[in-house]
Length: 314
Image: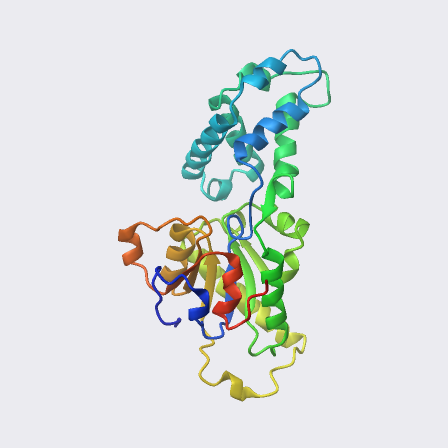
């Protein structure tokens, strides 16, 4: 597939760049649309405190725990589990619940929590660790207790949605999600009111591979094709004039994300254009950067509409 002309990572003024009207636009989720509300270690420590039975005798121990140590332990546990069981266990037939249960347990143990506490039983219908884990897995990190939208996320997605809605089916880009996340991402997007903006959601857990693997990008192309077929089946009207399509490369695919290694390298190696949302001000490794073309770096999500010739929504 063809793609837009190359842009280097040093291009950080979105208004100076225009992509041809693409046929497919996808976005990453974590770090691009929303981010942890507080450091992971703090969320894990709060869960321990919230579910500790009154008078258990473990109160002093929880007061002595360090949230930063838990965050460090989480990063190590997450990295190790990802290497052993990629795609949240999909590649090794491990459920995402089992995958995360092991990560959470290892985070606590290596973050300074006494293993005896995790085995604490208080006569309830489930053990202490079971309740803590269920809260983290099924509620905290599926909504506003664990995640926070990045600034102007709704405004940016609404601007893109209005743009798409103004176009006929032949010109309108398909818009989707490609995320290294488990199946809870769809629920999280719904809770934040973001699911309405996307035609499809592709998750590494369900695909069995993670970005930067090209297979997940190819799956997005196939999914976009199905969306367009559905539009045709439903009788979506075409643009009133085909002249607007002259000179527009209808095979342009654009992926937007905050990770250079996963989002940009993955997208460009798949033949796509990439947009790095560099909201943390990180600089890609120079050796990797020089080997990757056809991407542009912006400072925040607010810069995205201008890439498609749209006004800044805020």
